Amino acid sequence: MKILALIGSPRKEGNTDILVDAVLSGAKANGHHGEKLYLYDLNLLPCIDCRNCKNGDMVCTRDDDMRDIYPKIEGADVILFGTPLYWYGPSGPMKLLMDRLLPYSETGMLKGKRAVLVIPSAEGADACEPVVTMFRLSLDYLGVDIAEVLLPTAYEKGEISSNTEEIERARGIGAAL
Ligand SMILES: Cc1cc2nc3c(=O)[nH]c(=O)nc-3n(C[C@H](O)[C@H](O)[C@H](O)COP(=O)(O)O)c2cc1C
Image (cartoon, rainbow, N blue to C red; front, side, top):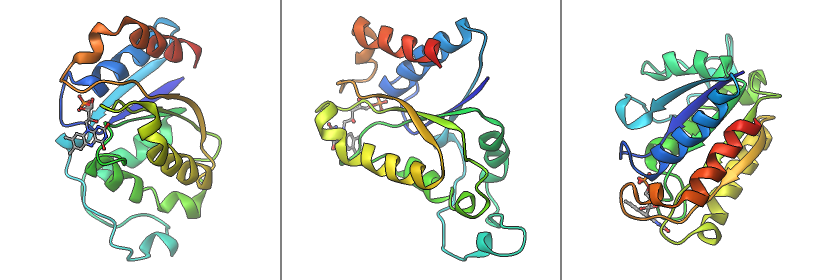
């Protein structure tokens, strides 16, 4: 099984990154394949509602790094969305990526895939309700089932690594995929 982890935090070795690593290590221990992409390292243009993805080939015609990401998304069995909570929503690049999933509302190519959400925040799980709803409604629309949601509390860079309970939970999620 292939897992594509999309990391929407600018902090390498930050809380999102550490938790995603834990999920992937659990998955890899069970023989699955994982790949991480740091969205802040990529050139991602915003959706401009040109509707090109609703006509003809039904593909996005924006010329940026999504051209490499689309095939990876299509080839994955599980898509892991990892983002810190930024003002009760996802980080900017993660929202940008979500908008760019619009072609799949026409093609239905994501139907049957599974998703995992990893969203650390200073305030904890209750504060993540709006962002989880955003992911749930959007992914539902695309036919993607959310398999697991991890919403740990952490603020400082790397703080989550001392929370063995959450790290074990993350590993368990990966192992159970
Ligand atoms: C611009 C910005 C907005 C934030 N907004 C929230 C918020 O609304 N609620 C919250 O609990 N934490 C908020 N945080 C804190 C981060 O979610 C938290 O530090 C998280 O652990 C960072 O994860 P990372 O280490 O993977 O980047 C915000 C941080 C930044 C930089």
